[in-house]
Image (tube, rainbow, N blue to C red; front, side):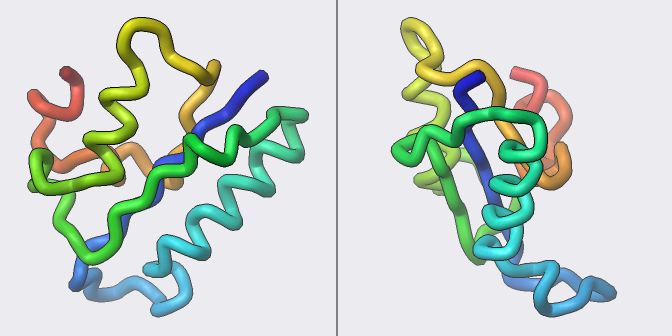
Length: 96
């Protein structure tokens, strides 16, 4: 299976260890997850938004690139994220 990765972190994440905040760390964990399951990470479909809130949608360049890649047919089979909230904080927009 072809896998894409999306990683995002806010500027402030109280109560979370510094290394867990890193988008680099999130991507590394996602790669390990993909490898364990036999997925192939498609390098041009690793999307990152660093230091931006999950409540923001329009200004997240990585997320916007990801959304554009989905049309007309997604170039990957699965999307790996550390947590669903990485995609967004606003339920209605995240579900869309």
